Image (cartoon, one colour):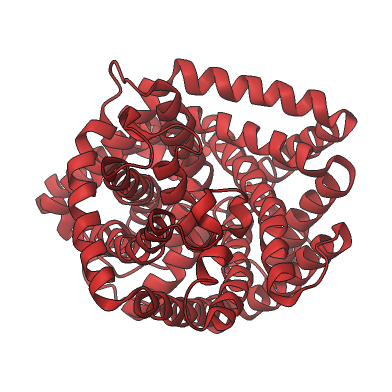
Length: 517
């Protein structure tokens, strides 16, 4: 029997086609209305709006920390279990499917979409923060001690290692399998098919996709806005220009323009090329830092950090009677909820570029490989930064005063500091462009009911909407409105975790049924 393709599901009964644009008749208008309503609420009184959502976020992180941590742990076990089981041999697109992208391009696109900017921003800042008790310390170890240095590296790797990528990967496995192997739309709602039958195309599935669009829009908008403030601070530091409000808006416009050009060119000629450039520049910056801190120091940091990660893994995965409750909720639980705001976005994008790969290959490339890269990155940047604090050299010796400037302060104490800082600025721009690109691509797919073959202009339209939401909040509400929207997006991490559990069950059920048939 010929498998269904997306066009069989996304038909005339579900979509509206106007002026060459292709929108789902429910998902698009409902998503747009909710986005518009939330933006208007944010702008009507940014302070009250922000405080309200911060209160909701705090209540969720405090009262459902156990569930959020359990689901993060379960995602790691779920992905590892699939890879080790016979089900890991299942190939996206069927037994004879071939990969569309080389392994290097595949990894570059996935990594740039999922974590690139974060490693630049927190690569120095988080290890120093954990070591100096900028906001508490993991497991309440005494700050600025040898024990704190090991705890800082172990906790940082815990936050950036297996868990976030497992959250992304769960979405990617679900979407990729049901889209390429079952002929369903490229959306999270397709993962409900084994549980709901044809009902996944009805109201429940449509609401899942609406939720995904809203979550992704606000996750991207806050990241673009707050990222602009961080990036322009670095640019002003490197070039000596004033970091004005107008400069920040200009940066958002420039990123949007570059992203539109890349998105118009498509995955192969646009997003893939930019992602490969990202990885090349990141490699040059990494080598510059690894050599700058000394080869033996880097090697020692890497071995020590790997051990620290292993030793801290189980204690930090525990949620019962934590002695460091404030740190636990303020760091780990917040991180897991924030990864969820990017979970569907990155997951669907990873699925989009992973056709032809087995589930086992996806676990290896999407969860294991980034963790190794993260280990090397933090060993160079974080380990080197902690060494500067211990030695009392440079601005970091006084602790973490400005998170935006931490990486630049660190580079000032290394050889070729100017080149390193310029590389950071370039990477901030390119990583933000690829993140927004992949996000707009995913949101466009979802708003079209999972149809992956929309026109380039339609993808750019969503990119412009993301930029408009960002600029509107930025101009009228400032970082107060942006952080309020961010708090709302983090609060949405809880229902996403519940959805993720259903998707895991649906995927296993679908895979087992296929193996029996």
